[in-house]
Image (cartoon, rainbow, N blue to C red; front, side, top):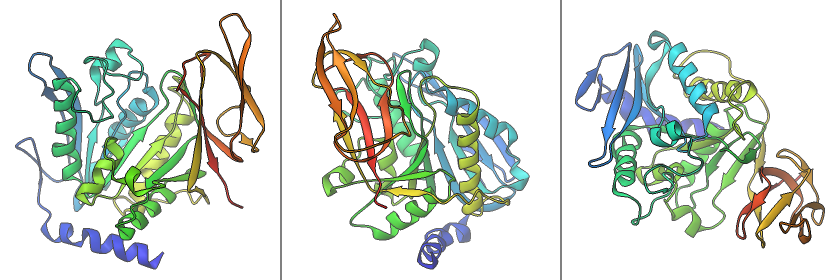
Length: 341
Protein backbone atom coordinates (compact mmCIF):
# COMPACT_ATOMS: atom_id res chain seq x y z
CA UNK A 1 0.00 0.00 0.00
CA UNK A 2 2.90 2.37 0.76
CA UNK A 3 4.22 1.79 -2.78
CA UNK A 4 0.83 2.55 -4.29
CA UNK A 5 0.36 5.77 -2.30
CA UNK A 6 3.86 6.94 -3.23
CA UNK A 7 3.17 6.22 -6.89
CA UNK A 8 -0.03 8.28 -6.81
CA UNK A 9 1.76 11.20 -5.12
CA UNK A 10 4.58 11.11 -7.68
CA UNK A 11 2.09 10.83 -10.51
CA UNK A 12 0.18 13.98 -9.59
CA UNK A 13 2.81 16.20 -7.96
CA UNK A 14 3.62 17.93 -11.25
CA UNK A 15 -0.02 18.79 -11.77
CA UNK A 16 -0.38 20.30 -8.31
CA UNK A 17 2.63 22.54 -8.90
CA UNK A 18 1.34 23.88 -12.22
CA UNK A 19 -2.44 23.85 -11.88
CA UNK A 20 -4.30 26.94 -13.10
CA UNK A 21 -7.94 27.73 -13.83
CA UNK A 22 -9.35 25.01 -16.03
CA UNK A 23 -9.84 25.71 -19.73
CA UNK A 24 -12.31 23.74 -21.82
CA UNK A 25 -13.11 24.45 -25.48
CA UNK A 26 -11.43 27.88 -25.22
CA UNK A 27 -13.47 28.86 -22.18
CA UNK A 28 -11.87 29.53 -18.81
CA UNK A 29 -13.64 27.75 -15.98
CA UNK A 30 -12.80 29.60 -12.75
CA UNK A 31 -12.19 27.77 -9.49
CA UNK A 32 -15.35 26.92 -7.50
CA UNK A 33 -17.51 26.76 -10.66
CA UNK A 34 -19.77 24.28 -12.45
CA UNK A 35 -20.00 24.62 -16.24
CA UNK A 36 -22.45 22.72 -18.48
CA UNK A 37 -22.08 22.77 -22.26
CA UNK A 38 -23.34 21.01 -25.39
CA UNK A 39 -20.59 20.14 -27.88
CA UNK A 40 -21.74 19.89 -31.50
CA UNK A 41 -20.13 17.03 -33.43
CA UNK A 42 -20.46 16.08 -37.10
CA UNK A 43 -20.67 17.58 -40.56
CA UNK A 44 -23.60 16.18 -42.52
CA UNK A 45 -24.99 14.32 -39.52
CA UNK A 46 -24.80 16.40 -36.36
CA UNK A 47 -25.20 15.44 -32.73
CA UNK A 48 -24.53 17.14 -29.40
CA UNK A 49 -22.56 15.76 -26.49
CA UNK A 50 -23.45 17.13 -23.03
CA UNK A 51 -20.29 17.77 -20.99
CA UNK A 52 -20.05 19.07 -17.42
CA UNK A 53 -16.96 20.61 -15.84
CA UNK A 54 -16.96 20.98 -12.06
CA UNK A 55 -13.91 22.98 -11.04
CA UNK A 56 -13.34 22.81 -7.31
CA UNK A 57 -12.43 25.56 -4.91
CA UNK A 58 -8.98 24.07 -4.42
CA UNK A 59 -6.51 23.00 -7.07
CA UNK A 60 -6.05 19.29 -7.57
CA UNK A 61 -6.14 16.45 -10.14
CA UNK A 62 -8.54 16.17 -13.06
CA UNK A 63 -10.83 13.15 -12.80
CA UNK A 64 -12.54 12.26 -16.05
CA UNK A 65 -15.84 10.35 -15.98
CA UNK A 66 -17.11 8.97 -19.28
CA UNK A 67 -20.46 7.22 -19.41
CA UNK A 68 -21.20 4.29 -21.70
CA UNK A 69 -22.36 4.61 -25.27
CA UNK A 70 -25.50 2.55 -25.75
CA UNK A 71 -29.14 3.51 -25.97
CA UNK A 72 -30.41 1.59 -22.93
CA UNK A 73 -27.66 2.49 -20.45
CA UNK A 74 -30.04 4.32 -18.14
CA UNK A 75 -28.59 3.65 -14.67
CA UNK A 76 -25.41 5.58 -15.28
CA UNK A 77 -27.24 8.52 -16.85
CA UNK A 78 -29.35 8.91 -13.72
CA UNK A 79 -26.30 8.41 -11.48
CA UNK A 80 -24.33 11.10 -13.32
CA UNK A 81 -27.23 13.55 -13.17
CA UNK A 82 -27.50 12.97 -9.42
CA UNK A 83 -23.74 13.49 -9.08
CA UNK A 84 -23.58 16.79 -10.94
CA UNK A 85 -26.68 18.14 -9.22
CA UNK A 86 -25.37 17.22 -5.79
CA UNK A 87 -21.69 18.06 -6.28
CA UNK A 88 -20.59 21.25 -4.55
CA UNK A 89 -17.50 22.82 -6.20
CA UNK A 90 -16.74 24.45 -2.84
CA UNK A 91 -16.08 20.97 -1.40
CA UNK A 92 -14.06 19.54 -4.29
CA UNK A 93 -10.29 19.59 -4.66
CA UNK A 94 -9.47 19.46 -8.35
CA UNK A 95 -11.71 19.14 -11.40
CA UNK A 96 -14.38 16.73 -12.59
CA UNK A 97 -14.57 16.47 -16.39
CA UNK A 98 -17.75 14.53 -17.18
CA UNK A 99 -19.14 13.25 -20.48
CA UNK A 100 -22.77 12.88 -19.48
CA UNK A 101 -24.04 11.11 -22.61
CA UNK A 102 -21.58 10.30 -25.44
CA UNK A 103 -24.26 8.89 -27.70
CA UNK A 104 -27.38 11.05 -27.63
CA UNK A 105 -28.83 9.65 -30.93
CA UNK A 106 -28.90 6.11 -29.55
CA UNK A 107 -30.43 7.27 -26.28
CA UNK A 108 -33.20 9.31 -27.85
CA UNK A 109 -33.94 6.68 -30.51
CA UNK A 110 -33.89 3.84 -27.94
CA UNK A 111 -31.31 1.95 -30.02
CA UNK A 112 -29.79 -0.97 -28.16
CA UNK A 113 -26.04 -1.61 -28.24
CA UNK A 114 -25.14 0.32 -31.37
CA UNK A 115 -25.23 3.98 -32.19
CA UNK A 116 -27.54 5.58 -34.72
CA UNK A 117 -24.76 6.42 -37.14
CA UNK A 118 -24.62 3.43 -39.50
CA UNK A 119 -25.21 1.07 -36.53
CA UNK A 120 -21.57 1.14 -35.44
CA UNK A 121 -20.58 0.50 -31.83
CA UNK A 122 -19.22 3.80 -30.53
CA UNK A 123 -17.09 2.02 -27.94
CA UNK A 124 -14.98 0.18 -30.54
CA UNK A 125 -12.46 1.74 -32.91
CA UNK A 126 -12.59 0.78 -36.57
CA UNK A 127 -11.39 2.62 -39.64
CA UNK A 128 -14.60 1.44 -41.36
CA UNK A 129 -16.86 3.30 -38.96
CA UNK A 130 -19.02 6.20 -40.00
CA UNK A 131 -17.19 9.53 -40.16
CA UNK A 132 -19.38 11.18 -37.52
CA UNK A 133 -18.84 8.29 -35.12
CA UNK A 134 -15.10 8.73 -35.55
CA UNK A 135 -15.48 12.44 -34.81
CA UNK A 136 -17.24 11.65 -31.53
CA UNK A 137 -14.49 9.23 -30.60
CA UNK A 138 -11.77 11.70 -31.55
CA UNK A 139 -13.39 14.41 -29.42
CA UNK A 140 -13.59 12.10 -26.39
CA UNK A 141 -9.98 10.98 -26.84
CA UNK A 142 -8.36 14.36 -27.46
CA UNK A 143 -10.59 16.75 -25.53
CA UNK A 144 -11.52 14.55 -22.56
CA UNK A 145 -9.17 11.59 -21.98
CA UNK A 146 -6.00 13.52 -22.76
CA UNK A 147 -6.95 16.19 -20.21
CA UNK A 148 -7.26 13.81 -17.25
CA UNK A 149 -5.01 12.67 -14.45
CA UNK A 150 -7.39 9.82 -13.63
CA UNK A 151 -10.22 8.32 -15.66
CA UNK A 152 -13.39 6.34 -14.96
CA UNK A 153 -15.30 4.60 -17.73
CA UNK A 154 -18.84 3.81 -16.55
CA UNK A 155 -20.38 0.74 -18.14
CA UNK A 156 -23.81 -0.77 -17.58
CA UNK A 157 -25.73 -3.63 -19.08
CA UNK A 158 -27.82 -2.80 -22.09
CA UNK A 159 -31.30 -4.05 -22.94
CA UNK A 160 -30.43 -7.73 -22.59
CA UNK A 161 -27.40 -7.96 -20.27
CA UNK A 162 -27.40 -9.50 -16.80
CA UNK A 163 -24.21 -8.25 -15.12
CA UNK A 164 -22.87 -8.43 -11.58
CA UNK A 165 -21.65 -5.05 -10.27
CA UNK A 166 -17.84 -4.77 -10.18
CA UNK A 167 -14.92 -2.43 -10.69
CA UNK A 168 -12.29 -3.37 -13.25
CA UNK A 169 -8.79 -2.44 -14.30
CA UNK A 170 -6.19 -3.52 -16.85
CA UNK A 171 -2.87 -5.19 -16.09
CA UNK A 172 -0.15 -3.51 -18.14
CA UNK A 173 2.83 -5.82 -18.31
CA UNK A 174 5.20 -3.06 -19.43
CA UNK A 175 4.02 -0.61 -16.74
CA UNK A 176 3.69 -2.20 -13.30
CA UNK A 177 3.28 1.16 -11.57
CA UNK A 178 0.29 2.10 -13.71
CA UNK A 179 -1.29 -1.28 -13.03
CA UNK A 180 -0.82 -0.92 -9.27
CA UNK A 181 -2.39 2.56 -9.24
CA UNK A 182 -5.42 1.44 -11.23
CA UNK A 183 -5.78 -1.69 -9.11
CA UNK A 184 -5.84 0.42 -5.93
CA UNK A 185 -8.42 2.76 -7.48
CA UNK A 186 -10.69 -0.18 -8.34
CA UNK A 187 -10.29 -1.77 -4.91
CA UNK A 188 -11.32 1.45 -3.20
CA UNK A 189 -14.62 1.94 -5.07
CA UNK A 190 -16.63 -0.24 -2.72
CA UNK A 191 -17.67 -3.18 -4.93
CA UNK A 192 -17.64 -6.79 -3.75
CA UNK A 193 -15.68 -7.84 -6.83
CA UNK A 194 -12.69 -6.33 -8.64
CA UNK A 195 -11.85 -7.78 -12.06
CA UNK A 196 -8.40 -7.55 -13.64
CA UNK A 197 -8.33 -7.77 -17.42
CA UNK A 198 -5.35 -8.38 -19.67
CA UNK A 199 -4.37 -12.02 -19.73
CA UNK A 200 -1.88 -11.48 -22.55
CA UNK A 201 0.19 -8.66 -23.98
CA UNK A 202 -1.71 -8.57 -27.29
CA UNK A 203 -5.02 -8.03 -25.50
CA UNK A 204 -3.63 -5.21 -23.36
CA UNK A 205 -2.09 -3.39 -26.31
CA UNK A 206 -5.36 -3.49 -28.27
CA UNK A 207 -6.90 -0.04 -27.71
CA UNK A 208 -10.27 -0.46 -29.42
CA UNK A 209 -12.15 0.02 -26.14
CA UNK A 210 -12.54 3.38 -24.41
CA UNK A 211 -11.28 2.07 -21.08
CA UNK A 212 -7.89 1.17 -22.61
CA UNK A 213 -7.31 4.52 -24.31
CA UNK A 214 -5.85 5.97 -21.11
CA UNK A 215 -2.90 3.58 -21.22
CA UNK A 216 -1.30 5.40 -24.13
CA UNK A 217 -1.36 8.68 -22.20
CA UNK A 218 -0.21 6.94 -18.99
CA UNK A 219 -3.55 7.79 -17.36
CA UNK A 220 -4.73 5.49 -14.55
CA UNK A 221 -8.09 4.23 -15.78
CA UNK A 222 -10.74 2.07 -14.13
CA UNK A 223 -14.09 0.93 -15.43
CA UNK A 224 -17.35 0.07 -13.73
CA UNK A 225 -19.87 -2.59 -14.69
CA UNK A 226 -23.08 -1.88 -12.78
CA UNK A 227 -26.72 -2.06 -13.81
CA UNK A 228 -28.41 -4.40 -16.25
CA UNK A 229 -31.49 -5.03 -18.38
CA UNK A 230 -32.90 -1.47 -18.18
CA UNK A 231 -32.95 -1.33 -14.37
CA UNK A 232 -32.65 2.44 -14.13
CA UNK A 233 -33.73 2.97 -10.53
CA UNK A 234 -32.74 1.78 -7.08
CA UNK A 235 -29.64 -0.06 -6.04
CA UNK A 236 -27.72 0.27 -9.34
CA UNK A 237 -27.85 4.07 -9.27
CA UNK A 238 -26.94 4.08 -5.57
CA UNK A 239 -23.96 1.77 -6.17
CA UNK A 240 -22.67 3.90 -9.04
CA UNK A 241 -22.81 7.10 -7.01
CA UNK A 242 -21.23 5.39 -4.02
CA UNK A 243 -18.37 4.11 -6.19
CA UNK A 244 -17.64 7.56 -7.63
CA UNK A 245 -17.76 9.18 -4.19
CA UNK A 246 -15.48 6.48 -2.75
CA UNK A 247 -12.97 7.07 -5.54
CA UNK A 248 -12.98 10.84 -5.03
CA UNK A 249 -12.39 10.35 -1.30
CA UNK A 250 -9.56 7.90 -2.03
CA UNK A 251 -7.95 10.38 -4.46
CA UNK A 252 -8.33 13.09 -1.79
CA UNK A 253 -10.56 15.15 -4.07
CA UNK A 254 -13.22 15.42 -1.39
CA UNK A 255 -13.59 14.68 2.29
CA UNK A 256 -15.71 11.90 3.72
CA UNK A 257 -15.65 8.31 4.89
CA UNK A 258 -15.56 5.77 2.08
CA UNK A 259 -17.00 2.27 2.23
CA UNK A 260 -14.33 -0.20 3.31
CA UNK A 261 -15.70 -3.37 1.73
CA UNK A 262 -13.09 -6.13 1.29
CA UNK A 263 -13.25 -6.96 -2.41
CA UNK A 264 -12.61 -10.30 -4.09
CA UNK A 265 -9.99 -10.00 -6.83
CA UNK A 266 -10.70 -11.91 -10.04
CA UNK A 267 -7.68 -12.14 -12.32
CA UNK A 268 -8.94 -14.73 -14.81
CA UNK A 269 -12.27 -15.32 -16.53
CA UNK A 270 -13.67 -17.52 -19.26
CA UNK A 271 -16.39 -16.88 -21.84
CA UNK A 272 -19.00 -19.35 -23.02
CA UNK A 273 -20.10 -18.83 -26.62
CA UNK A 274 -23.20 -20.11 -28.40
CA UNK A 275 -22.67 -22.63 -31.17
CA UNK A 276 -26.23 -22.34 -32.45
CA UNK A 277 -28.97 -19.97 -33.54
CA UNK A 278 -32.02 -20.51 -31.38
CA UNK A 279 -33.77 -19.96 -28.06
CA UNK A 280 -31.66 -19.83 -24.87
CA UNK A 281 -32.88 -21.09 -21.50
CA UNK A 282 -31.10 -20.74 -18.16
CA UNK A 283 -32.05 -20.30 -14.52
CA UNK A 284 -28.53 -19.14 -13.62
CA UNK A 285 -28.14 -15.42 -12.86
CA UNK A 286 -25.24 -13.00 -12.65
CA UNK A 287 -23.67 -13.37 -9.22
CA UNK A 288 -24.40 -17.10 -8.96
CA UNK A 289 -21.50 -19.44 -8.23
CA UNK A 290 -21.11 -22.40 -10.59
CA UNK A 291 -18.85 -25.46 -10.75
CA UNK A 292 -16.93 -26.73 -13.74
CA UNK A 293 -19.07 -29.14 -15.73
CA UNK A 294 -22.33 -27.93 -14.16
CA UNK A 295 -25.29 -27.68 -16.53
CA UNK A 296 -26.17 -23.98 -16.66
CA UNK A 297 -28.45 -23.72 -19.67
CA UNK A 298 -29.46 -25.05 -23.07
CA UNK A 299 -30.45 -23.84 -26.54
CA UNK A 300 -33.39 -25.08 -28.61
CA UNK A 301 -34.40 -24.59 -32.19
CA UNK A 302 -37.55 -22.61 -32.99
CA UNK A 303 -39.69 -25.71 -32.40
CA UNK A 304 -38.36 -26.39 -28.89
CA UNK A 305 -35.99 -29.20 -29.88
CA UNK A 306 -32.77 -29.08 -27.86
CA UNK A 307 -29.74 -28.14 -29.97
CA UNK A 308 -27.03 -27.92 -27.34
CA UNK A 309 -26.51 -28.10 -23.61
CA UNK A 310 -24.47 -25.39 -21.93
CA UNK A 311 -22.01 -26.38 -19.20
CA UNK A 312 -19.70 -24.27 -17.07
CA UNK A 313 -16.16 -24.48 -18.45
CA UNK A 314 -14.63 -23.38 -15.12
CA UNK A 315 -15.69 -22.99 -11.50
CA UNK A 316 -16.35 -19.44 -10.39
CA UNK A 317 -18.86 -16.59 -10.24
CA UNK A 318 -21.07 -15.56 -13.16
CA UNK A 319 -20.01 -12.02 -14.08
CA UNK A 320 -22.24 -11.79 -17.14
CA UNK A 321 -25.15 -13.68 -18.68
CA UNK A 322 -27.11 -12.83 -21.80
CA UNK A 323 -30.55 -11.99 -20.49
CA UNK A 324 -32.98 -12.69 -23.33
CA UNK A 325 -34.27 -15.77 -25.16
CA UNK A 326 -32.98 -15.31 -28.74
CA UNK A 327 -29.30 -16.05 -29.38
CA UNK A 328 -27.16 -16.35 -32.49
CA UNK A 329 -24.15 -18.53 -33.17
CA UNK A 330 -21.13 -16.71 -31.74
CA UNK A 331 -23.08 -14.78 -29.08
CA UNK A 332 -21.50 -14.63 -25.64
CA UNK A 333 -23.79 -16.51 -23.24
CA UNK A 334 -21.77 -16.31 -20.01
CA UNK A 335 -18.65 -14.72 -18.57
CA UNK A 336 -17.38 -16.66 -15.53
CA UNK A 337 -14.80 -15.18 -13.17
CA UNK A 338 -12.42 -17.66 -11.56
CA UNK A 339 -12.04 -17.29 -7.79
CA UNK A 340 -8.96 -18.80 -6.16
CA UNK A 341 -9.55 -19.36 -2.43
